[in-house]
Amino acid sequence: MSTQPRRSWALALIAAAQFMVIMDTSIIGVALPHIQDQLGFTQENLSWVFNAYVIAFGGLLLLGGRLSDLFGARRMFITGWLILLAGSAAAGAAGDVATELSARAVQGAGAALIAPSSLTLLMMLFGANPRELTRALALYGAAAPAGGTAGVFLGGLITQYLSWPWIFYLNIPVAIAAVIAAPALMPAGTRARGSVDWAGALTVTAGLAALVYGIVAAPERGWTSPHIWAVLGAATALLAAFVIIQGVRRAPLLRLSLLRAPNLTAANLAQALLGAAWIPMWFFLNLYLQQVLGYSALPAGAALLPMTLLIMAAMITLAPRVIARFGPKATTVTGLAILAAGIGWLALVRADGSFTADVLAASLLAATGMALAFIPSLGTAISAAPPADGGLASGLVNTSYQVGSALGLAAMTALAASHGATALGDPDALTGGFSAAFTGAAVIAAAAAVLAAITLRTPSPTSQQATTEQTTAEQEALAVRTRA
Image (cartoon, rainbow, N blue to C red):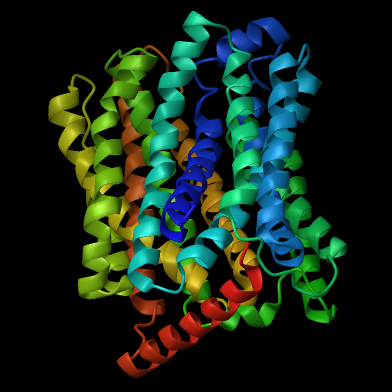
């Protein structure tokens, strides 16, 4: 196979990986009542079918990025798919609560290897050409909303016409295809010298997991619960220990000096706040469609299609052109500002409203902002790190987005509940709660725009050219070493 078609197929496989990783967070939604009935979940612990995946995914991403650097991105990409395959088979065959939750955590662990290694492979394949890299990141970014919406549709179709275990079994043929195709399509990647910082990996994974758990569980247990404060206190202690360990170890999981790389911390902050605004908007918009406007799951998914299709089209066509014309900083700031305006418009939803009048235009405006902000902030976060730390940078930006999403959703859930969103069957109270959540998410997006404008740097033409030439030389040398 010639180089260009091979790279195109490799990009398709990387985008498919992103698609599946995100789809696994949304495909279970419609099936949850069926899983509850058959496995004996209580109403209180049912949400952990979702949370077990997200916590394992977000908590292990940094470790996944480091393993990708140490053992090669292709090897970790394949390993992640094998772990996801095993977890999916176990989740579908589970006969009790403990097995189901354990299997979902295994799925999340596999995703935590797939996500950072995918981005590392993308950078290896397309990083030498800024235009190609922007287009590749656009396709990669468009795969995320596509996976989220496909999960809603497929979850409903599979649950209705087959049975809920098949929402997990669906991963198996895709994983097998990825494992077979990866050696022929992907470069092996370099293997950095060093050892795994297991103490750092343990503290950051446990700390992030505890933080996400505490924030997610707080709306259910109450923010004044001693249990929640104990968990959040443990999370703070573990993350502080992680920082201390990174400062004293010779080969740390995350070199603290890496955070001083221009734009890396600022771009990761933008990604975290982007997730903290976008995911709550998507979540509560779905609830508004179903619980206030009376849509069932599949029509609600169809109502989200215009927004999803616009994101995909804008990421692939509009965002690269805007970035080329105005640069990544201006595009990120503008996208976040547009996102804030769109979500703020959604805050005006009415209890007696309609999809056309209350949702369509506002959701399309928000989608435009998401498409413009996601690609440049993601590309900046990855390219700000040295090539040798590509896997770690990929894990870091994925962690930022996933943890930001979890924290934002938990905070907006608490805000919505305090404004009446728990009053099922009362459209006025529900709308008031959802409106409060939209307002909060809009404030987060607006704050992100301001912070991005302040903290992101615009490289001078001279330094930008030097960086491009250096990156090109490094990628050419890398291609010689990793040609396979």
